[in-house]
Each structure stands twice: as structure tokens, then as C-alpha cells.
Length: 91
Image (cartoon, rainbow, N blue to C red; front, side, top):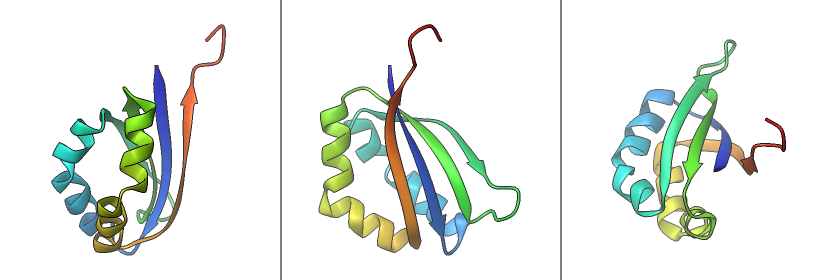
């Protein structure tokens, strides 16, 4: 199984979460499923989340789509990064 680990820093977590939740259908269509979300202890507007990825090509298209950039702006994303990962052998 492939996962996407994401770190975002936003202006306001509640605003980001509302936009994220409104994108649920687009996430499903892209084969993405939220597994978990953690806010840092020092700053709730800095957080990490993990998405299960069913199709890496669809996920990459989703990330690069103009609609995703628009949603990020609407959500107040200041910066972030993401990585596609899979379990290491033996784990």
C-alpha cells in the first residue's frame, strides 16, 4: 500500500479543515482516503496528515490540478510538503 504524508502550515486550522472536508468527493475520485491527522503540540496551525493512496497517478494529478491550488488558497495554506511512501521491507 502507498501512502502520502503531508505537512501543512496554515493561517487557521478550522478554516483549512472546512475546505479539506468540502473536497471529500474530489479526494475519493482521486483514490485518496484520510488515515490520520496530527497537529503539532506547539502550533495547531502546523500539522501532518496521512492519506491512503489507491492510484499514485491519480493522486499526482489531483495534487497538480488547478482546483487543488485554488482549494489551498481558499484554505489559507502558507506552506507545505508531501511525500509518497510505502512500507519498508520487513515492516
